[in-house]
Structures are given as C-alpha cells and as structure tokens.
Image 1 (tube, one colour):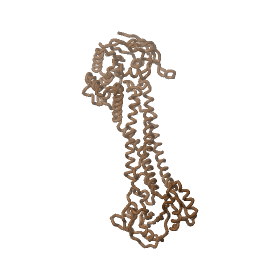
Image 2 (tube, rainbow over the protein chains, first blue to last red):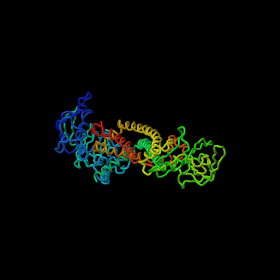
Image 3 (tube, each protein chain N blue to C red):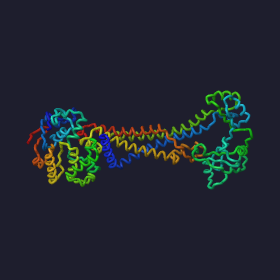
Image 4 (cartoon, chains in turn green, orange):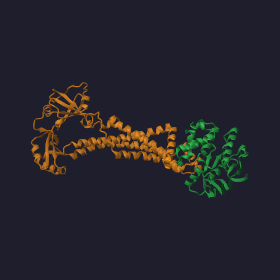
Length: 225
Length: 379
C-alpha cells in the first residue's frame, strides 16, 4: 500500500517561474491497477514521479508499506527505486544503439548480480512478452508495440512489485493498447501494483483497472474504485 | 563478487556506449593520442639527449689543459707533461691531438682526432669515420678511399678501416679518427706538440687544488674541468629542451582547452541518457563509475597509443619531427638513432597531467547531471 498525506509539489520555488504542480494530495494506492487521469498539466506525471521516488514532495509525506519514504536520503531513494519500482516512460526511453537485451538488463547492472543470472531473467521477461526473438537486435529496429514491451521488460527485470507507467498507450494504436492491457492484467494476476497515467478512455474503462484517480489543477477531483 | 559483477556490468555498458558513438570516440582518442604523442616524444627526446651527454661526459678527462696565445688556443708543448705529472694527486697526463678539417666539397667541417685507446686506433694510412662522413661524400661502394686535401693543396688518400655506428652519432657523426703519425703529417704538427693535455687525478675532490698548483706552473694555460664541460653541455641541451618545453606547453594548452570544452557540459543526448539511467535505478555513484570507466578507457587507450607512437618516432625513426632542433648540434646533421632512455618519473607525470584532467573533465559535468533528481533530469 502506498499512501500520500497532504502532498504538494512546487517547482522552481521562489523564482519567477514557480509552478505548483500538486497541492494537498491525500491518496491511498492499493495493490491492483490504479489509473491517474486528467488533462495535461493536472499533475499526473508529477504524482507518478513522487510515488516512484524520482522527486521529493515540497510538503507532506509519502509512505510505502507503512514506511515514510519521502524524507529518505537520495541513496536510499535510489535503492528503493531500483528494487521496488519499475518504470515505463511515455516515450519508453530505451537507449538507442544498445540491443533490446542490453537495455533490459540496465536496471540490474548496479545491483551486482552475476551477468548470466541477469540475462536469464531478462530473456525470461522478454519471452513472456513475446520479444525473445529480438533480444539481440538494436532497439531502433523495433516497432512501436515492441518498443513498449521492451520498456516493460526493462521495468520488470528486477522483479519490482510496483510498475509505474506514464501514458503507456499514448503512442499506440487500439490493437497495441489492448495488448498492453493484457500484459497489465497478467501483472495484476502476479500480485503486482500497477500505477498508470492516462486520459485514454480505453484504459480507464478496461477490466483490470481497480481504481481511477481524477486530477485537475494539481488536486484530486475524485477517486473511483 | 557483487562489486566485481557491478563493475563488470558498468564496464559492459561503457564499452557498448563507446561502440555506439564510435566516430566521436575515435576522434577523441585521436586528439588525445596526438597530444600524448607530442609530449611523450619531447620527453623521450630530452631524456635521450641527456643520456647522450652523460655518456659523453663519462669518457671525458678530469681536467683539460690548453695553451693560450693572444687569448686563443694554440698547440701545447710536451714539456708541460712532466710539470703537470709532478703535482701530487695527478695520476696521468696524456697529450691529445684533434682539430677540424673544412671540406670544401660539402662545405662541412669534420672533427679529426687521434683516439686515446688502442682499440680505436686505425692502422697507418687508414681512418675510422663517423657515420655522416661517407654519407656526405656519397660513398656507394665498399672500399672507396677518402681523399682529403691538405693546406698545401695536395690530396692525401686514406682507406676506410670502418665506420662508426649510429648509436653515438649525435656527437661522432662528423668524426674522422686518424693514426697519430698520419695526423701529424696531414696537419704539419711537429712531434712534441699537442692540441691539449688530458689530466686525470686520483681524487676528483682535489681537482681545484690540482688546478691551483698547475696554474702556478703554467700561467699561460687554460684549465677546463669536467664540471666546465658539463655546464657547456647543459647549456647546449637546455635551449633544445626549452624549445621542446615550449612545444609541450602549446600541446598542453590545446589539451586544456579541449578538456575545458568537455567540462563545460554534456550534450543533450548524454544528459538524457543519465536521466534515464537514474530513473531506472542507477545512482550518482553508478553513473560516475561508468563515466570513469569511459574516461579511463579513452584516456588509457590514447595514452598507450600516444606513448608507443612517440617511442617509435624518437627511437626507431630518429625523431624526424625534431630534426630542426638538432641541426647545429653536430656540424653535420647526423642520421642518428638515439639510445632509448625513458624517465619513468616523467612518464608518470605525463600520465597524471593528461589522464587526470581528462577524467576530471569527464566526471564534473556528469556529476552535476547525475546529482540532480532523475525527475529534473528527465524534464
């Protein structure tokens, strides 16, 4: 369970370009699939960043399994990020020039596990996502859907219990969006927590989704379970 | 094992990163290696010149006594020999015969000497030549004699006993070694006359006392100690080293500009990659370790390449880039091979002067990017 208590986030504090992206967020995210929805600028990505320990709240606190994580020093946050969270970015952010497999093993590199073990784990993830045949190919040759699945495999290579995905279907056609939802359903079945941002109606109304959080102007408008 | 695996994984990523930016990587290595090549060449060259000077000095007498007339050197008589030999502490006095011969054919000056060891003494009618003399005279066939014209205008034939190697050619390139009788006959030097006298003393610390006593006995003479010769050599080498230091300074300056340019920031692509790595779980130390590997591979590889090329340039190819610096050292510019001499301290300094600034230049902007929140880097 991830909880946020009175969380707000202000960028460029005290400068002329100061922006408050979130204000007074109180939210509990249970295991399952949670979708954060809202128009651009509503604070969805900021909320994902805070939950995923990629940024710190300006005020308020965030807890993970009862432990306050928002005030942890950077190295603990990094450790949490690599062990507890997997990230799928809107543009997938695979590193060009590397192969699919090289990209997928990247989150495991700093953990110091033997290479053979990490590669076996990565190949198993790629196989589950139907990409084992393209493991040695450079990521540039992948289609949009394959790129997304490679990004998901990378997010799951450390067997993180929480998957965070920012607008995962924004660049996908309907068929690929449905394929993604199948993957999400599988992850939910594995007992993982999936947190997505989206304003795609296909996602919001999909079967595996357990909660929808509607944001507007940095505040929660409503939460639907 | 965990740390080893971690570094192995980071190294794998680094190699892959360098391979996918291979044009940029090769350009970096080329620039870096060129700087190291120039600096290392200058260092090898200077160290080798110093060794040549030391080798020359090692065979120099403790004291040279010359006769002066009107302030210029003249021949010295053999009667000075017993006067010097009688001084306490003097173990030997040898008369030396040497001079210069101006070769009108080439416009070059040769140094003509009677060697002081039997091993180097050519038989009558024969000479031993420095490596540049047959080259200048364009001797193509073995057995070609050397004809030298005396002051009177007649030509004297000498057969060539052998030619000296290139190892010591820096000082011996223009040398002609001659038998004493031939020397006296060729230059019309009467018996009992020498160019100068070489004096050896038992205890070098007593040299100043020996000189003081010799000055009383031979008031018209000039006394040149080994230390005086060393100072002269030092001056000759110093200005050459000075020019090389200036060259090295220019190279270092170019390198500093290159490093500063690199230190000024990362490309948008590099910054984005660091953001991705941090977002997927790498911490600042991982990113910096990866960049240190990258800097180490580039600077280490370039240092190795530059040093090997410099070694080949100086010791195999005879330092053609520095040839103009050597002209004027010997009257004839020698085609010499410097004896390999590497100053480990200098090489270590060069390593530190080039690789450390490069590593710092690589790491500083990375540290700035990597220390930021991954969210900030991503945005």
